[in-house]
Length: 319
Image (cartoon, rainbow, N blue to C red; front, side, top):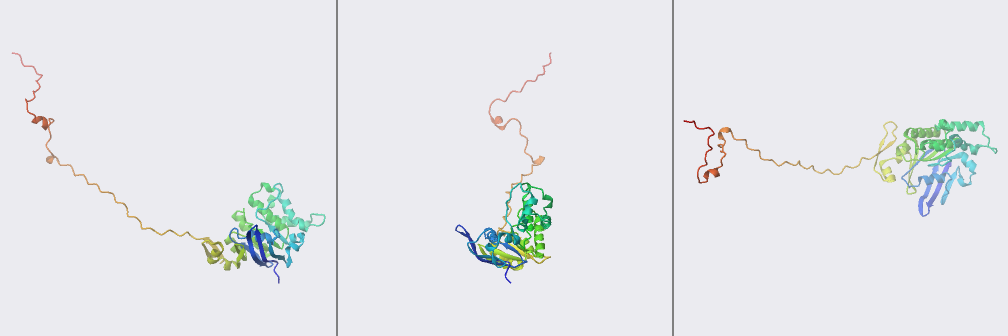
């Protein structure tokens, strides 16, 4: 049985820089594939080629055995939905009208909105958690709300294959997990999912197959347990990471490695304070030197008449 989506010998370059170099990949119907790799490895370029947004310089890409550029655009849009990274739309376009655009490939000649179309639009908005934002203009939404609105647009197409370029960008952790759980649930219902992801832990937890790119080439392809190993991650990213099995699911958990501590240097001995001599204790009274008269010794040794004594102020008694 031929794969639903197949790329053979795909090569693409921007000017003189080769971004994809002889990439071959097959995706079977019902798979959940996450494309991983460092920045600049060619992940988004490969996804754009698979979604017919970019024509490769060499190689072929086929959908159910037919070259994708030979497929009628409306037919291709019924079968394949693409959620780009940072999608653009008029800022005054409201969410509900954006999601209705996903029904264009299915509408008839006069473009009438039928009951089934309405049901698919409501379902897509509910799944992407934007039903309460239906009347809001895109220019008033946060980055995460805009991202969910474009995911609703893709789901409204009723595709059999959805391509997503880093769909969790701008989403908080709650909406990241909700979206990935939704994709896993829809995948269980038959939707084929191919997505570019940066979070290795989330990729290993939700995807069933990982395809790793480095320098425009596929360097690993297989189940998460086979791809996400310490040696494998180091070969892909060149980063020291720790991989340990999840205690509940057994799937690999990727953790940053603790930085190596520098070699310990011997501690310097504490600096001793210079000891000061203790002052000698004061002599006791009996051993103390005799008191010195106020008259200095030098004055006593000078020869000459003795100093006169001051006359007494008492008057002599009169006879």
